[in-house]
Length: 108
Image (cartoon, rainbow, N blue to C red; front, side, top):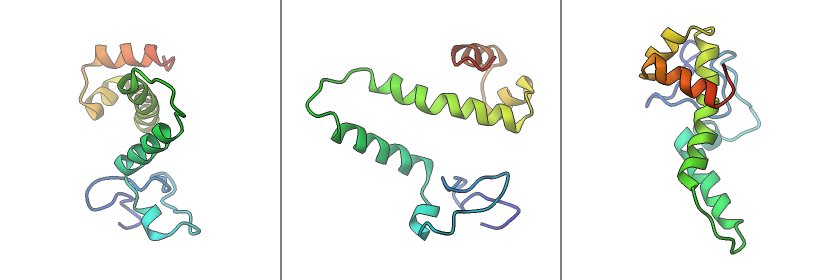
């Protein structure tokens, strides 16, 4: 990772580093700086299940998708400065699908 490319060697972005600033929180240890999105999701789900306190749970898949998809769309739209055609290319989605999802999350 260098100042020009904030991504780790596997193409993931450390969760406490911003591609805009390229700066990392120096108070975090190396493991935390190199934590991937996947690691964060796994930890969040472990935490979620540990705190259910015996309650029944359903629709975890939809819950996780909504929690991840909304900030993904927001971040990509910011990255492409609102250009939906470019965002659909970046995301690998049809432009119509992108617009539907942007409306779904109140981003359009």
